[in-house]
Image (cartoon, rainbow, N blue to C red; front, side, top):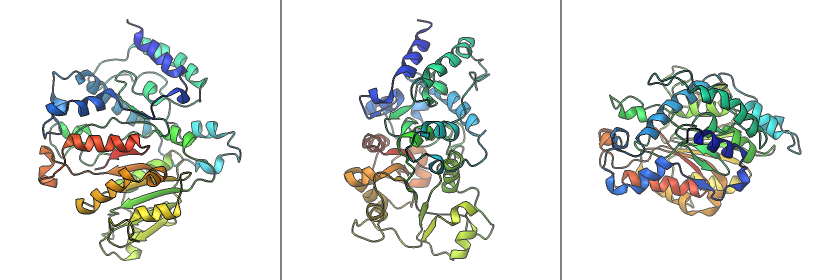
Length: 379
């Protein structure tokens, strides 16, 4: 039994993506959070504080692995070139380009010490180079689950978009549940993107890349570029892994001077930016419905990301429903970020009383993932 973990990893490394039977496979922790709905309360933090939970050890390992994963990502400080410009016309070099620019830096050995002070298993250090060679015999990519989350195995997976974080309360970073609830409120690094997999499976040389920012609240105080904007930080993370956006559609209801807007975003965003200073409308036939714009201008071969955070459930929920029910829209949208306001004890000071429960939200996001959209919670 002592080597069962490594045998499992060898089998994972040898398995080809085409052999995956289910398009979306939820992590064990995600399924537990949904299936134990009768045990759930309105607390978003109960799952992290339950010492009797069967996934307690998995969550503890996940926290440590997530920490080291983000430490490794921070090594990528420069923007990578746009991978599409490097693809050959026949795509024959795509795997090499994606490996060089979209895959995260590989972990040469296991982390030297966990957050709790424990040291790496020496067997892991010995076996990782061997497993990596086996992995290179398949599609050449860095396997996030094996490379960074091998102990907990808590990553969900979509055949097209790769690995992603499990859907869990409190619908944001787990640090929110440790100590002061303001901690972790604005942290984005609970979100896992499999950029290498996206590069190989969703991008072509002629793909258009689109970021739709619904609720584009930048720092419009005349203080220069807004380096703290979550949307800007996310756009720049994509650039660090070779995905440059051709179009950034920024919808915002508040009236702002255009010069102020453009002075608030980095130079690399000014060319692609479409500033749409109107109120978003949920009516599918309205020209101010962003979904209508996507359906009219883009197609399945394009790479489309939506961030929805306008703090207006009367508009957000119908937009969400359209995404859940429109097959053509599902073919176009690849990534969806949304701060879903639900009934959660810890968020009542900010959200107030809400209709939907935490588990209902998890089910909705999982439904989106099963429809081929990598749905992530926003902050």
